[in-house]
Every structure is written in structure tokens, then in C-alpha cells.
Image (cartoon, rainbow, N blue to C red; front, side):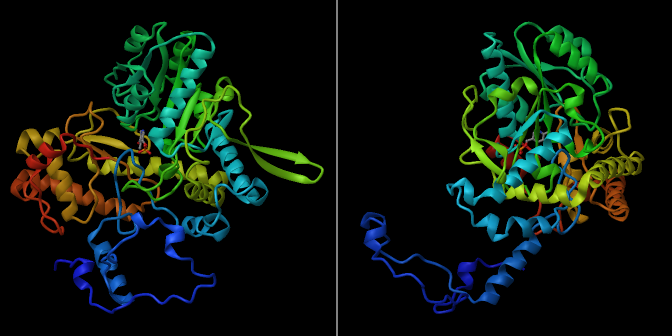
Length: 486
Ligand SMILES: *Cc1c(COP(=O)(O)O)cnc(C)c1O
């Protein structure tokens, strides 16, 4: 059944609210809003009862797919289950009703939370300090790259190039370009890792930094990271880590110990804030000793005096790159990450990664029967299959397999990324899925491989059970001109 628009449900005079009288005197409208901004006709709003509103949105949410409904295997995006307690804490009025311009004496709790969160993140990644300002992973990348730029400039050195590996997330070259750098792509080897010979060739005196993702987007750990770190530093360049994939590292190993100078975190992935649909994110940045003076302002300082501990915002940072965000970052996401880490404790944080890795390897072992794995196992928190076998033998593409998964009640994995894997199906189960869920998901993918062989038309016409059936992809891609599964 089609869901009507809420405007079509509207009947004059119906009401879904009941407001108490105002406790403050009403001001004449003209004194608040200039007449030219005032409406001449009343806004056309739907008039519906509370139960109609609730039912309408519950029906819509049933048509939608979300992580509260079933597994969301979107590789590189870490769509894990987000504990509801995070929403409870971020909604506490002591947090949610703060005004960002309140004096620090009245916001000590919020400042303490931010200070402690940055300390916990600092420890998790083994860095010297962390800024919480950036509003997303890509924004963290830009922040990190501007820090690197400032570092070189302050030493009187002009370097124009940033090396980015070819399996990198598209935001890496985009952020580097936004900061004014020329991008040089470094190849991967047959093992799916950075090709050291290619890196050696491209590392010259004009290279400001190398951007790496570890584990990379195919889910493989850079085993030669210490050699890479030495090569980069011997060249006077810095090492940047895209830490959006921290889900594989927590409590096991630390970017700081591997020699990274900058790392960004994706709190909305690894540290359990709902995301997708462009909701508020947070991309804190950790730095090594060398980059401390350039961190964005304000930074939060802890002061111990005879009267006790207090926190303040410090702007006295003459070498800072400045502000990266209005106020102090996406505070409600910070509260969620803080709650999540405190709830898990150090041991729990490590278990997250252990289980994420076990889940990925277990699921992979079930799927190898029918799908090709272009690079050798074992993987970390995610893996990237190729749909080449299905395409060559039966003309069924990865796009079709992804659409058929919707019929089986699952969200599709990330597809056609990273670009170095043909017909890529990139799957990240996360630690929050049970063995039973993984089994059902694997069964669906194996069944689809069977269908591709025996009745390809089923896969080619999918999805058939969703509210919106197969779209005209050719037209859609003409309109969009780009395709991104992330
Ligand atoms: C998600 C992701 C990013 C970008 O993060 P946003 O918060 O979407 O800007 C960067 N790198 C990798 C590897 C990612 O998975």
C-alpha cells in the first residue's frame, strides 16, 4: 500500500498537540521580526491527530532500512549497532540545553567530558594530543593536512606533493587537493598493500606527507608499516593515517607506535554514533609531538589549583592553524563516544576489535565457496570480494547482486569501491552481529550466487520486494554522473 503524504491525511481542525499557556509576556511580533519577513498568509501545515502522526512515521520507518532492523554490511562505513544509552546521555538536559557561549564556569561538566574524551582517544591511538573540533572524517583529514602544511612552512620548507595510495577513500585526495596539494598516487602490490618500490620512487624532496589507511580499505594490515614510516621520515616527510577504520585496532595496536604523525578518528563509525543520511559526525585528529603547536584553537586545558580541578578554553596559541569549526565540534556526538568508551572500559574496547576481526574472517570463510577474493587472507575488520566470476560466466554484475540482497532483507554492501578491485563487493560485518545473523547473511549471498548461475533473470530484475522496484540505472547515472556506494 502506498503511504499518503501527511498533507493528504490533514483535516481542518484536527490537532496533535496541547500546549500550556506561556509563562512570559507575549511581545508584539513587529518588535521581534521586521514586517517584511512576516508571512501575509498563514503557513500551510498538516492538521492531524497525535496517533495519525505517529502511525504515519512508523509506517514510513517500516519502509526504510536501518541498523535497528537488520545487519548493515556497508564496508568502510562501520555501520555497527549504536547502544541506545548513548542517545540517553547526549539528551540529558545538562548537555543538550547548554548554550555554546555560556561562560566556562557554568560549563565545567561539558569541558571535563571533552577533556577526558580527548585523553581517552589520545591513549587509544598513542598520540601526543587530540583536537575534537572537526565535524567529520573528511574534515579531520583537511585539519590534519593543514597541520602538516603549517609544520613544513614553519620550517621554511615548501613542499607541494602529497602521496596517497590507490586504494584510499576518495576523501583522501579530495582533502589534500582542498589544502592546495598536488596528489601523487602510490600503487598497491599483488598482496593488496603499499608497493614499497613505487613509494621509494615517488618519495622526493617535494613530498609533504604520505596518507595511508591501516588496515587499508581492502581490510589488510600494512605489515611493512615500520619500514614505510622510516622511509617517509628519512625523507623529511610526515605520515598521515586515515583512522576511519580504527574498528580493527582498538586496544591491539596504536598508530602512534607505528610512527604516524597525524591520525583522524571517525567517532560516528568506530565510537558508535548513528550516521548515514548526513547526520552529525565527528572527526577528531590526533597528532604527534611535532605538530602540537599548530593544533586548532581553542584547546581545553585542565587546571589544578588549591580550590580544585577546573577546565578552560585556551586561545593563546600563536602558531595555531586557527579554528576549524564554529564553537567546539559536534558536542552531542562527543557525549555519545564518551559514553560508549566509558561503558566498555579498556578491556571492552579491545574486545570490539577482536570481535570485529573474528566476524569478518568468519563471514569471509563462508563466502569463499562462491565468490572470488582478489587478495590473500586473513583480513582485519572487513574484506573485499570481486563479482568477476558471476559477471564473466553469467552476465550478472555486482550491482545486480547488491540489489538482489535487498530482496533477502539485507542492506547492500559497499560496491565498486575501492577502485582497484573489479566488481568490488566490500563487506564489513562489525562486531555487533551475532554468528546467527552472519550465517543468514552468508546464506543469502550464496543463494544469490546460485541464482546467478541457474536463473540469472531473477538477479537481473531485483529488487522485487522493496517499496521501490528496480530504477532506470542508466538514466540515474546520466543524471548523477557519479556513483558512490558509501
Ligand atoms: C568514512 C571514511 C572517510 C570519511 O569520513 P566522513 O565522516 O564520511 O567524512 C574517510 N576514510 C575512510 C577510510 C572512511 O571509511
